[in-house]
Amino acid sequence: MTPLSFSRVSVILLLALALSACGFHLRGKIALPADLGPVLVTSTTPYSPLAQAVADGLRSSGAVAAAEGATGVASLQILSERWGDLPISIDEFGRAQEFSLRYAAVFTFLRADGSELVPQQVVELSRDYVSLPEDATGTTTERETLADELRREMAAAILRRVDGVIVGGANGSAPAP
Figure 1: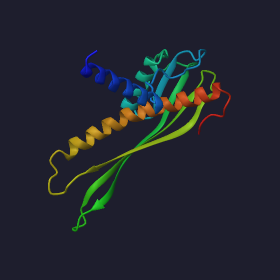
Figure 2: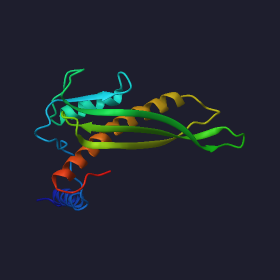
Figure 3: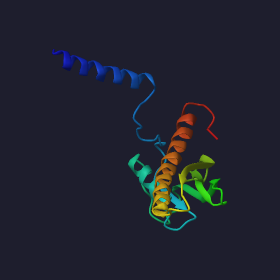
């Protein structure tokens, strides 16, 4: 083995060891009960991109999608979605320069019999961005990009919450709030 290839192998092994030591692991499918059956994702907002993203995530985790309007099926209900822009800094003329984009969703997951699989929970996310009053070029696009990113992260956070409650309940511990 040449000194260069030995150092490469050493670095790769060191990185692999460091990643495993810090607790890093790839996220797998979320845990769903075997008796769950088809799942319908509903939202109070018609054509909600969040509901679609959550439904896609559930399908990729092995859940069977229920037909729209189906009754007697498990349902993940997105009860509320709220967006807000909050100024977090202003310039010497009193104009907002920096904002915090906030996104909150309330959801619950019910079994087909109406019992709670995951109790009602609130998930809140936020991102800060700069919007200089003198140069508003691209500000709308930046905000839209952040909103899309927050929507993807919200769907992932909801699925992680579902997974955490189901796995926690399966291990005999109390469901997470």
